[in-house]
Image 1 (cartoon, rainbow, N blue to C red):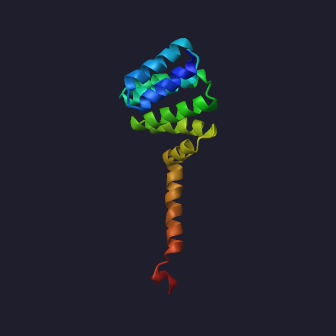
Image 2 (tube, rainbow, N blue to C red):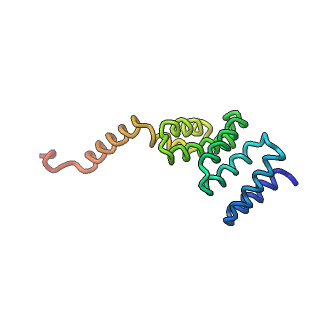
Image 3 (spheres, rainbow, N blue to C red):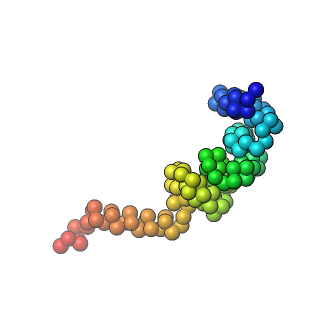
Length: 143
């Protein structure tokens, strides 16, 4: 059986809610072709859905390492790891992952990096206030 077929079966199992079967398919794909980053990404997603955050992070580390931090698999792994890091309150590390994924072309990661950037958040808030004042000038200011 082809590794890609095993991954597709794993995705199908996960989508139908059979996480143990999905985990089994992804693990089998990894045993056959341990240098394939996407299988680690998929298994990480399954582990996350099962509540195994540490296991998910380990698989994402492996996917990022195998992909040398470039390409679609790296981008997906960085976004997933960024989300997990945010969930565990590690915002600074998450921002680094989102910035790297944004550089690889992820619009979602770009938005997350901006949200987590304290300077950008401050600038956005100040800009919003200025725009609101321009849109709704106070009557007292117009006299």
